[in-house]
Length: 203
Image 1 (tube, one colour):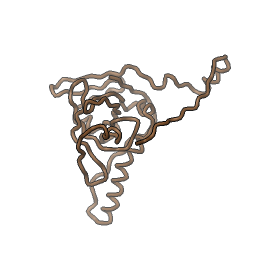
Image 2: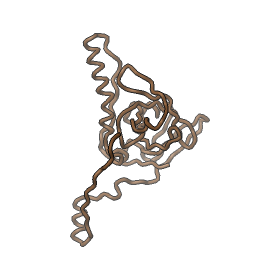
Image 3: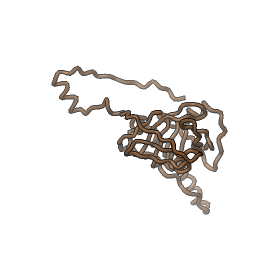
Image 4: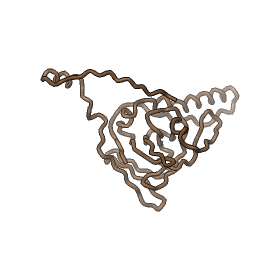
């Protein structure tokens, strides 16, 4: 199992709105605001996986969902948990309808080291992660996240804890500053200019 905990400044999900207004005019505005806020995390999470996985208050790791290995982001700032649309196409699991334009997959069989930690996942269109686990899942399973120790502890049904530690993966080890690159070139190091094109086509 692979985990990464680093530092970054990227902005993440927003708290979802609370309830509707009882007034008809305000009710429409409340519904519109709630739908906007529910879509906000989709835009916030539409960033590169490495950029988000290196934040100091998130943990990225591999879980098993419906017997499929999934890349998960555990975000302490996210109030809810999410699943990407691409992953939903691979699983046969009914979604629960809500009063708003969102779908929720209740009690998905999320596993860590053979232990079940069910998650209720809201469907959102993001690409870099398969699922995002927020405070709802963390509090339900009494998860302890230690950013300093780079470990996550999950409470099993038996009362014991399963600890998963980071293995020291660093997404930024191959990144250097411009000034450092210029110094290396002046010292005679070979330099290559590359053009990278992402050919991934969204379904």
